[in-house]
Length: 80
Image (cartoon, rainbow, N blue to C red; front, top):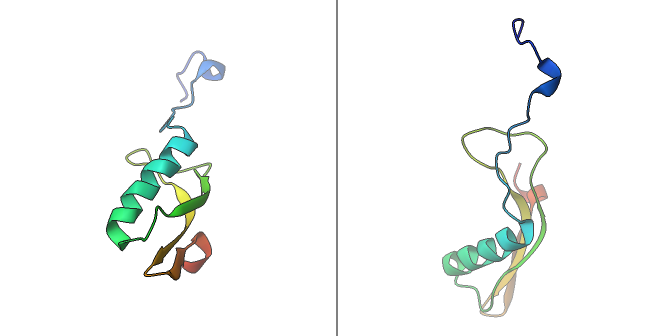
């Protein structure tokens, strides 16, 4: 801002400070209830992008689970 007297002292906003390991466990429980998994899904590559919106938090992850012993998965590369 042109009239900001101290531009070097601006603070970067923190969108979410949730621990990624805790978030991965929460995502696994959430996903298990939606895909009727035989056991808790395995979450990997859980990450937040460097930039994103201010209204919500984007979380990227890969997931593997089984339904009736058939392996299922979802990963970042399979969704455009």
